[in-house]
Length: 252
Length: 254
Image (cartoon, rainbow over all chains, first blue to last red; front, side):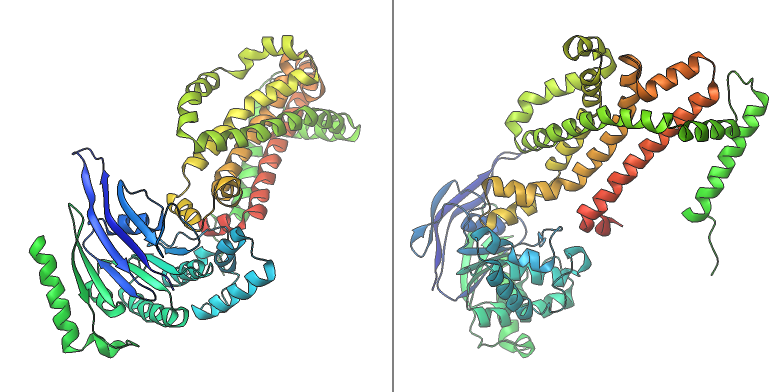
């Protein structure tokens, strides 16, 4: 069981028009097996926050903890899923999924069986030997998710993973992700700028505002699981969407 | 099915026949001492191949060409990777590299003669000098063009140190590395003959010199023809190697 937390994280980027405060005293905590979304417009620092939590980007100040221990650099305790997939084009689907296990020195036979199980879990059976460029965007991100899950991380960090996909594929992938999450029981921190996506997937939604990047609200999503299409049409779902929408609009 | 005129299978033979036609026509109006028709060149080519002189010379030339090329590749690839990955090293080293690159390698021949002598080592040095930078520049470009997202993905999976180079940097830069190797081998063939003309005349270079001194234009053309064909073959071989070694790249850009 894993929890991940940030306390008073600050990050400033230098730019031509002076310093941009990407994150201003941001704190958050995600507890075990929780699915939490960070929702905000582009440029609010939500991706920076996620990268800092993985260790890909250094914070200027603040404390980052995973299960109470400080986070200093990326490790295999956390898996990262990128918006632009970032699959290794010279590796097949299986080769990409096995990458993290290779680094860890997992024996070949075990790598194969884990990869095979994940290929089935994300619905890529029959595509194991394909290269990324032979796959559609949705399928590439299934590989991206499987690659992150293959190292069996306790926490999954997802940076707008469905942002590059068309609307229909996006909704399919949301259902896929919930199914995978239910099977793998990971703690998930999910960055998105889609209000509907955040509500549909999450237990909690953290609303972020830009310049300076701050967390404006922490909203509990009351809907039961497993979630399905019918949740999207509930009056409470629309009410929550309107509520979040107006809060975001108020600060812009 | 209609066969389009622009298809390579149709266009290549047509272009070759047309080229030979123009060449033959030109030869009819030019004095024999200055220009040889394709028929005469092909005749000399057959004769020089038959008596073994041309294949022997080519085999001799290939030695310093290959040694110089391989040394250049073996040095340019790691140097390119190191300089390409480090902004600090690049800032310090690049002005020097660019300054040396600006020197025509042939201008260095007198020094190479003093340092390496008139024979094999001197020729190898010139071949090296003529293809090292072509390879280096492409490798550098390849390493600098690596998608930052791929490096992020590797880091997020806790890949560091030498393994990062082996598993990500080199494969990611490999299309550019192959471009460098292909451009470089073309230059190496070029340098192979240049070396034989500027140092002591041997092999194909010697054949070029003696035949042109004797106004045996057909033989000169025959040697040039072989050099050109050999250069083409080398580059095609590199293209083929690229398709075999990094098939994912060829397919993704086709």
